[in-house]
Image (tube, rainbow, N blue to C red; front, side, top):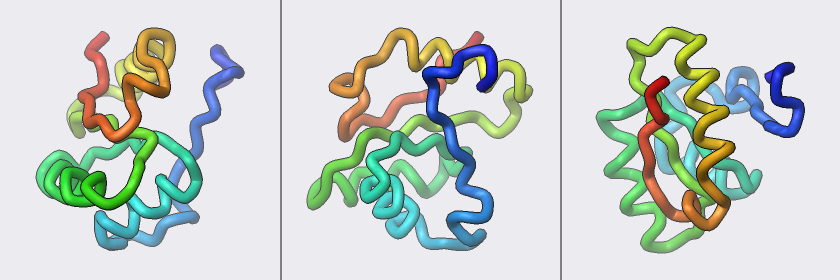
Length: 98
């Protein structure tokens, strides 16, 4: 995110092992105080709905798997520039299309 140095984006690669259960991924994001971006559009929404019944989460943004990387980057910037922390807290959103 060199074009937008104020965006603090971190990859889960190397921090969260593959096949980690969704609830544990959500718990990790909550503990880190981070909005989670996920390609897991099939199971993550269900686990998210259950998770926020008991815990706070900075937010979940779902990203379609077929989007080009450039569109994902632009969508992240658009989301960052338009949504506040309150807009995202315990909310599930789709990454804006660019």
